[in-house]
Length: 214
Ligand code: E4P
Image (tube, rainbow, N blue to C red; front, side, top):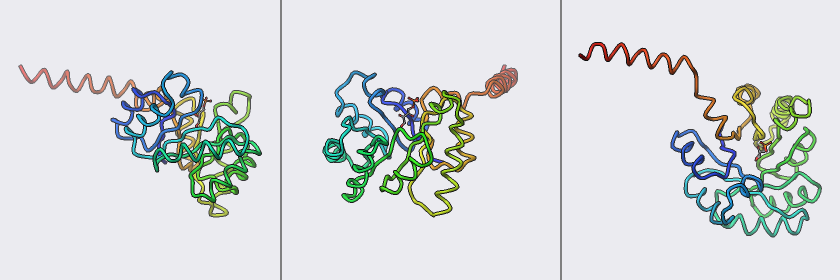
C-alpha cells in the first residue's frame, strides 16, 4: 500500500519525506488555506519535495470552471493530480479531463456507488472519506472493503485512496482491505511508528552498553 501525506504544510511534508516512506501528497482547499501562502507557490514547493502524485483541488463547482482550473493546474507538473468533488458537475469534468489525458482524484466520496461512478467516468483515484463517515456513526472502512472487492471483480485499474484517516488502526485496516493508497495526516504517521516498548527497549540496550564502556 502506498502512503500519501494529507497536508499542505511544508515542514510536515519535508520531515515525513525524509523518513523515506512518502509516495505522494494530497491537499484540499482547507489544508491550503491554513498555510496562508500563495497557492501556486505552495504547490510548487511541495512538488519540489515529493516526487510522486500531488493532488490539488479545484474550487469551481461547475463543469466548465473545473475543467478550466484543471487545465491550468495540470500544467504545473506531470505529477499533478487534479482533485474534483464528487458532484454531477464534477463527474462530467472527470470524463472530459480523462479524455484529455489529465489525471484526476474524485474527492468527497462517501458511498460505494459514488466511487463506482467516478471510476466509470475515468478518475485515476477515488477518495472515500472514512473518518467523516465514522463521525456520523457509519462504518467508513466497509466502503473500502466493498470497493476493493468490486474493483478486483471487474479488474478496474482506478486506485482507492483511503482519506479522512484519523488514527493508526485506520491505516492497518485499510492495508488489510487492500486499499491502494492511504493518505495520512502527519500526526497519525508519527503515532504509527511510536511504541513505548521500542523506546524503553532502546534505553535499556544503551544503558547496558554504556556500563561496559567505562
Ligand atoms: C483527502 O484527500 C482529504 O484531504 C482529507 O483526507 C480530508 O479529511 P478530513 O476529514 O480529516 O478533513
